[in-house]
Amino acid sequence: MTKKLKPDNQNKKITATNRPLIVVTTGGSGGHIFPAEAIAAALVEQNYRVIFVTDKRGAAFHSLPTVQTYRLAAESVAGRSIFHKLTAAVKLFWGAVQGIHLMAKLRPSLVIGVGGYASFPAVMAAQMCHIPVMLHEQNAVLGRANRVLANSAKLIATSFDPTLMIPAGITAVRVGMPARAPIIQVQHTPYPKEKNPIRLLIFGGSQGATFFSRKFPEVLKKLPKELQKKIIITQQARAEDLDYLKTFYKKIPFQKVTISSFFDNMPTLLKESHLVICRGGASTITELEIIGRPAMIVPLPSAADNHQMENARQFCDDGAGWLINEKTFEVDKTAKRLQELLEAPETLHEAAENAYKRSKPKAAQQIAELARNIIKGKLI
Image (cartoon, rainbow, N blue to C red):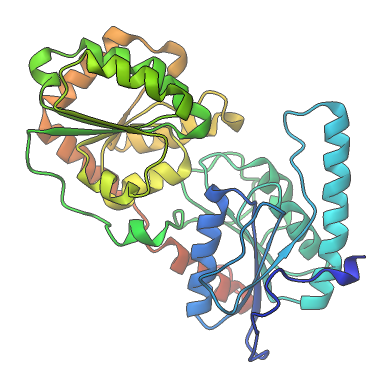
């Protein structure tokens, strides 16, 4: 059965087989797919052949005409019943068997794992076939899949420094996290000069949006009315919270309120914002850094190994934002801090510059360069 493993997009022709082949493998969520796409694009620009390996969720590369996509069996074992853990373990094992056949067929010069449980079978198969492996870690805490695979990796490219839980003796290089092209296109946009209106952008992602819909609005309600009148609110919220939020905000004299369950113009909204209020995911922090915007960050408490807290702590320790612990969240205290910030535009401007100083807009290109060095037998 594994011998019949075929790419989704067989119509994509791969030519010039004398060029080194690199496999990029990752989980199927958007948070993993976007960086993987950026890495693949950078490798193609460097004249490598690229194959993409993911699970059933991962989308094929429609924008890269020479990249084929293979899918391996994979499923997360975290946070599930014993039955589901066993089922997931069997799928991961089967994915590794598929991966071994695939690696034997492709014989790539390098495999790059971009995280997520779906990268596990392909990376493990590469290691079993003695194919060099490089890992990329998005967060400030090494992810569980990468943790298992780290000891056999040639190098770990990181988004944060330090990145916790990297085994001793493993080479790690901070390259940043590859960002989407629309974010790169607006990098280091000048901070808004106007003080009125004050634009606040609020979003929390699918898992953590309830806090920003049900609890954080109480903070905004506490602000002085004269300050409220200067504020434009743009907020992403879950569909089930939209009516509640609209009713709540009608009682507050904001200059303007826009609420939606989805925005397709986030780069524009970010660059227009004076302050962002958000979670601490690696993608979010990366985009704040590249565009250069300050943020009040409320890490998702349920994030694996509390990695959002560590992401946010590093961002805020460099003067780019302000950390709020949801577990000790106090409305009055947070409202006072928010008022102080909104009444001190020079402080926000300085934080915006500090955010950009942390940025690594050429992360994908740096990863491609590291790949070149590994293939040539060097680490850095």
